[in-house]
Amino acid sequence: MSDNEFEYAGSDAADGTWDDEGDFADYEGDFADLEAEAAEAAAKLPTVAIVGRPNVGKSTLVNRILGRREAVVEDIPGVTRDRISYEANWAGRRFLVQDTGGWEPDAKGMQQSIAQQAEVAMRTADAVVVVVDATVGATATDEAVARVLRRSKTPVILAANKVDDQRTEAEAASLWSMGLGEPHTISAAHGRGTGDLLDVILEALPETPREGTGGTGPRRIALIGKPNVGKSSLLNKLTGENRSVVDNVAGTTVDPVDSLVELGGKTWKVIDTAGLRKKVNQASGHEFYASLRTKGAIEAAEVAIVLIDASQPITEQDLRVLSMVIESGRALVIAYNKWDLVDEDRRYQLEKEIDRELVQIPWALRVNISAQTGRALQKLVPAIETSLESWDKRIPTGRLNNWLREVMAATPPPLRGGKLPKVLFATQAATRPPTFVLFSSGFLEAGYRRFLERRLREEFGFDGSPVRVNVRVREKRAKK
View 1 (tube, rainbow, N blue to C red):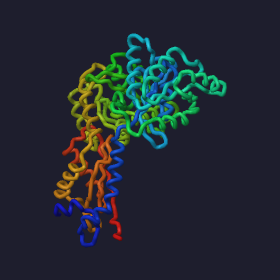
View 2: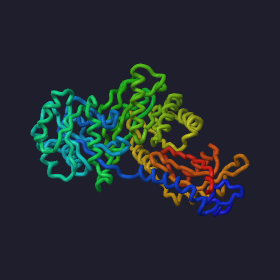
View 3: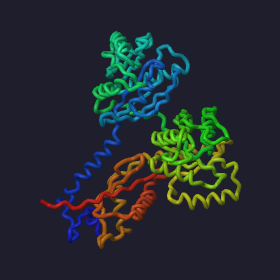
View 4: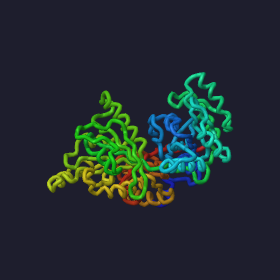
């Protein structure tokens, strides 16, 4: 196979030749569409900051916008402390919604740090939503927030929250006095008026985000595993306090527990999840809802640490948990916990089990730890960072195609129906996880796709991240 034949391979013409301009033009629309999708996925998103004094319902509104329970909500003020961004989608448009702690002008100590985070959000966001409790009216703190925002050039939207009936809606009219324009009446808890508010937010957001926006807050880690494997003990050891209830009885944790943890000089959001006993569709009662929440925590995370009890044989439950993480496309670190209970015989057996049971995921990074004693916990951060780096990695199209040409010239795909499938072009369509699309003149066998994935990893790394290789078979279009 000549270089020219490979570069423009993909024609299924009878003579096997390629008309450089005509045939390539048949496909270039596909390439443009695919690369446009990739560019859109990589583009920075505009940011809307949700601000206001403590306990007015900011996090509840964030969850309503996201359509899921992501931000932690409690009836006590001051639960949200950091400025954390989440990706949202409304009417087909993607943007970041930034949850902030309660803003108070004369705060001291930790409350002052919380207020400073909210001020940063107000300065850097593309639009700001000020949330006011309509049942209380504009307080001195609300007026102070309004004074700050009236001086800024950022679009400001006033949301009058906790409006559950017409009487409260009439009272919300008094909020015109804040000088921030029309009060948009909503009930974040019940969803009343939030669709109209989102329409207003989209109108205020620019097509291109401001410079300096787009921060995504702490990176998100989910602790996953079967019951009683040590997830809560690990979270408590990492935080240095008893954030999760720990007991020898399996299934103590039901709701995901979020904690901001300082590791390796960085702040991470660590989520302790319920132990997965059964498949979601086979669980019942509180186990069913715990499984759903755990699945949601995996989807919301960027990297999953799957804990496996190293002192016991690898079980079907362990494999099911790993499959769930891999299917979700999240970066993966396997932590073999309770290593302080592992002797030489058990180490030998564990290595045999790993070779036998985990042969399909040799790319997953492994760390041997003890949540009880703190053994080797410092090794978690390098493994997490490596996995996330792989998860975010993008390979330039030119370099990818040069590599692919060399690989396929050395090891062509198997014949199919008497014809040799030819790959015209390859591109990385997405990151998180890295997803590659090959345009081919014929079907590529699953075994050959696994071979390409293995060679991709050898050339470009991707340790700790799943890699997806998709094939688009294109029939040659008839010439006019």
